[in-house]
Amino acid sequence: MDLTDSIAPTSDQLDAVDLLGGPRTFTIEKVSKGNAEQPVNIKLTEFPRLWRPGKSMRRVLVACWGPDASTYVGRRVTLYCDPEVRFGGQAVGGTRISHLSGLDKPRQVPLLVTRGKSAIFVVQPLVESTEDRVAEFKREWKTATPERRKVIEREVGALTNPGSAGGVDPADPTLPDDPDLTAGGDA
Image (cartoon, rainbow, N blue to C red; front, side):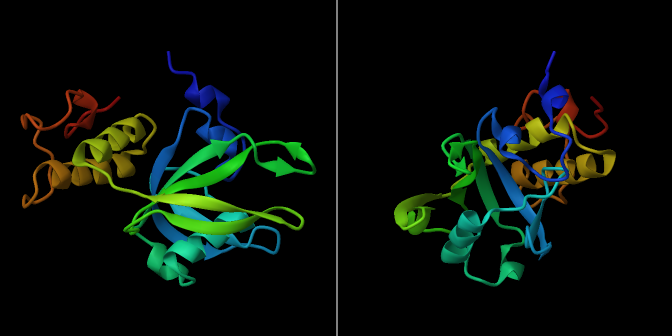
């Protein structure tokens, strides 16, 4: 029995605790303006709640991808829970970026750690294989809505059968051995 759903926070945004199981890679679907406290909302294709990056991670995004958030759509980001993130002098944990698509080499970004003290934050290029992407879709399938499952089927079809119309062929030996990812599967 998978207990993942039972420990999900009742928040309207992605929280560091959502990443306790390990880093996850997401596709940016949309970036919109938030409020004064959390000025940026990022809709992630593979996650039901918004990611609202803190100021340090917004600085990383701007340093790596530039200030025009409209160019972020379709790009990929790997997020992880960093237990050393401090708030109010205590280590409370926070969401950090480890990898970004579109980078040709690691990027070093100076960030404030505490008042008057900075440190270099390193972001790695995100290089994914077809197997990595199919494995990510396989994980997402378990909690995907019927509409999202249709998109996943098309994406897996495009990845595993380049040049095809994008449909998933359940008999294709290149697909993972998972009946839930084949057309018409429901788990």
